[in-house]
Amino acid sequence: MQFGIFSVGDVTTDPTTGRTPDDTERVRAMLTIAQHADEAGLDVFATGEHHNPPFVPSSPTTMLGYLAGVTKQITLSTATTLITTNDPVRLAEEYAMLQVISDGRMDLMMGRGNTGPVYPWFGQDIRQGIPLAVENYALLRRLWTEDVVDWSGKFRTPLQGFTSTPRPLDGVPPFVWHGSIRSPEIAEQAAYYGDGFLHNAIFWPMEHTAAMVNFYRQRFEHHGHGSADQAIVGLGGQVFMRKESQKAWDEFRPYFDNAPVYGHGPSMEDFTRETPLTVGSPQQVIDRYGAFWEQVGHYQRQLFLMDHAGLPLKTVLEQIDLLATEVVPVLRQEAEARRPAHVPANPPTHAERVAAARAAGEVHEQGVAAADHWTGRTAEDDLAAADAAAAVPDGR
Amino acid sequence: MPQERSIVVVSAGVSQPSSTRLLADRLAAATVEELAARGIRADVTTVELRDLAHEVVNMTLTGFASGPLADALAKLAAADGLIAVTPVFTASYAGLFKSFVDVLDKDVLAGMPVLLGATGGTGRHSLVLEYALRPLFGYLHADVVGTGVFAATDDWADGGGDDVKPLPERIRRAGRELAETVADREPSRPAGLYDAVPSFEDLLGH
Image 1 (spheres, rainbow over the protein chains, first blue to last red):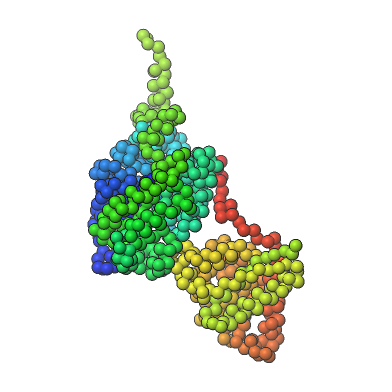
Image 2 (image 1 turned 45 degrees about the horizontal axis):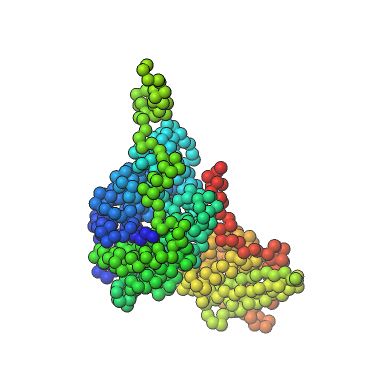
């Protein structure tokens, strides 16, 4: 089972000091946090994508590309990439580039965005959110798996003879997750393709999360990708820890009370009871998160939101250390001990996906013969010409 | 076997005892009686918004229902009819009443038979049912019965209030209209959570 952190990249005033970092400081803090998570031995760092203040991470592949160079082990991901308002052609190119640069140490998570105006800002209509997610993702997959794509659809300009470059690493596209909180259509989409499904459970009661995950599992089996318990599931979570539980409560309370999303609403007592937010000792986190499998089955990835609500960088790094040293080793061991043998321990790695694709005879070319821009010939013509040339007998 | 229906009563009175709750109970009793006369047993759940006020505000901030509010919303979603009663505050429904309506799923009242009631200090507020509550429930596509019941303070006195259509008579008539509408419908079946999700082939347009 993988454990990691995800950031929404909010720039929030620290309520205990009244200090607000500027955007540059916040971006650099995110880089520091990701590198620290790698050094601490966490499995995943994921960044959100937002195009509205107070969030800074508008350009995930720039950030993750840098991190691919300076980290060693950690899987780099998004949480989430906007499949609705980004051009799927740009997504195919940017994430294939990231896949190559990170040597396959990445995946990505599709989502639909956190604010209504992002749709009109990027020329889309929020009422088409689900159809956009469906059409754009279908095109994105084709661009990764087919060397030359002819396409027309409802939401973007048609493509004739288009080849997205670079081609996916080893001819196998990145592993994709679909993140959703309340749209069962997205769970259905993940199940249809046999992709991963991440339920960002952080603001929701566990019963809701369990219902949605189990729906995805049933549909995964229905669409023929394996048994329901073999579906690839991730959950969101959030914790704040100190060795002494009361210290955790005292320290985190002003951040909770003023947090942009849940501040000034339910009490921390209510919120920690109803949602996965756990404030207390590492052992309390182990007890809480170690029990989620009872409701959702063995799952493959647990992501924690830690750098939010104005928490200072130093505190976030301490939280990562506590998570990596005191919580994750225990949870990993517990998860592995109870995992049924036929259920995948982790989401598939790039190497595993390459092996599976080779076994199934599905590996694609990594390079495609170039289109001739001067005569307007396409790569298809070149491939046909290459085939014809290869067919000419020796000794001509 | 007698037929069964479920009626949810929402009362937004804020004091205890509450004349709004009193009116809600009378409307519920009239409806149950009229349903019984049609061979239908009604199961009544009364939701006092006063007890859910904090959860309603929390849900407007967090987007999810917790504890007893989640139960109330689930009951409402599965109900065959709704009786909704609010006090009049500053020329309209109570803010708490509107806040509760705001956290409902936008489709949950579509087609649901609804009886509206309101209470106020004087009869001068009686049209609040028509200019405030009826449009709100019309927007939600509820099937609001023709008679709404407004009770002014004087209506609770014997011989006070409206002596053309005294309150008990209006309550009986409203209860009968709701009962008739509910009785005409098939009982609502608890839907599976994701029954309405289209298959992905349909989403893809194949």
